[in-house]
Length: 101
Image (cartoon, rainbow, N blue to C red; front, top):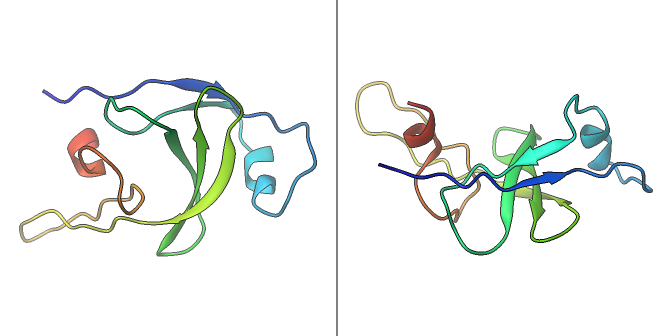
């Protein structure tokens, strides 16, 4: 059985924004939760798909989240109707289809 990380952080949007932050300003819920399996190190949540290959991710560790563009993992499930992993390339733990199947 896979155990997922449920680290929470509030996305602070009351600061000067760059273009990527405008996506975060539109979030209905400012609370972020980590989308990876239990792990050491920084936590991540995807906020927005920037294009077919890049997602805008929030990353945090004991403090304020920063927004960074990261390429998708893209690994496909085996079988006739494959699903692509939408977590970022190089993520630790299982793939997105393992969490949401």
